[in-house]
Image 1: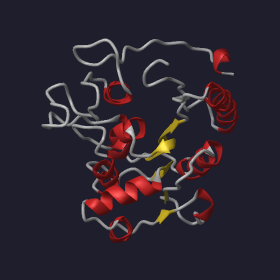
Image 2: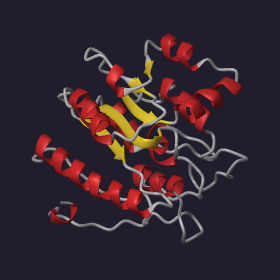
Image 3: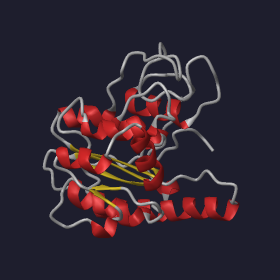
Image 4: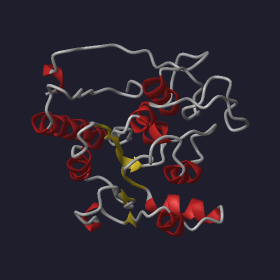
Length: 237
């Protein structure tokens, strides 16, 4: 289905001063328009990875929040991993997943990312606990709830956070996000990641095929007259 899309574009997401990029630098380039170093999340090239912050770059999601649009991120891997985190967070090291997840509750624009659905519950909870943070209490203080599965989310919660350990059901997460975000008449921004990194070729190729099917479903669900549906890789593989 992707190969039937009417427009084809090319983008250069190589990192600053290098040719081979990782997800952090690649996604930063996509959502901010600026190159940075591998391992850096939505900060400019003056950042020293793992040592010092550079200039914080405004992301596409943050621009959307600033203008009153609804926003969301969905991923079949850790929701605080480089690709989704680059949309809503900023850090000098992509490994700071606990710190990045907490930035959901400290938005720079608007009321912050509205729908956050993705995995690695045990790692994120464990890492935030090591920092002395009770993640559920932090969410509650911000009038939000972190669910352990998408199935637990009540229909009335329009700004859900779901942090399952297994987040392979990307279609369920994608449609749950779309159903909520599309209610905003101003529009919305939604990033959906279906990661294909794997040492298992059958699983990796299977994810690509299933993602293509999901994109077809989404294309039939949204109004393409006023919605930009973009399929890309944060770095080519």
